[in-house]
Image (cartoon, rainbow, N blue to C red; front, side, top):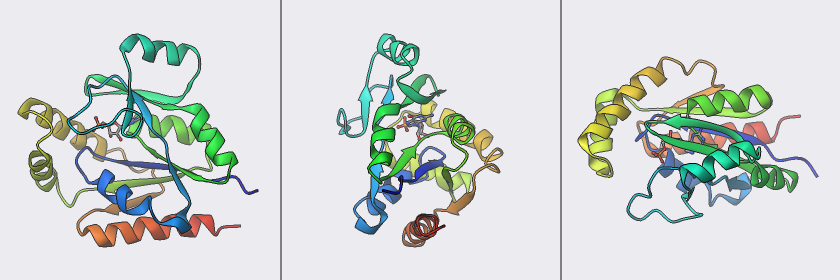
Length: 189
Ligand code: 5GP
């Protein structure tokens, strides 16, 4: 069986990655599996353990690093995030195309370890629009929003190493673009 793709899916906080993915995941022909990350961040209202994240203590996170359980890990605005290795490897062996929704430092670690991965970065139409969306989402306080915007400003300068950059201005168009990028990669060779 052909091994599944490893798809690195990134984009600044609030850009709509989650919404795009919720449209892509049910598309059967894409054959996707979503890698649930481990994080030390506290759950937001409505987030479910094992679905959105594995919410763990700092101690458990450090232990996971020591045991080499994580394929990559990074710190983001005061919290740790990492990709459990086993799920990714098992799913790929089963032919599933695994999606890692991760930030840029983790994405760099993955592209170094796995140069044949597919990397996609979602950008907002503008930083003003991003701030508006983050406020609309209402899941973070003012200080955190400003930290995330400042982080976005830095991150956007460093996206050249992604293979594909997609602008999420119109959601339907962005979904279609990402879908086509994945289909094209699946049909290679
Ligand atoms: P949030 O707190 O908004 O859920 O996530 C913050 C950032 O961490 C987002 O850019 C998200 O893509 C990223 N992230 C989530 N899981 C992981 C992971 O396992 N590894 C890395 N490096 N980043 C992650």
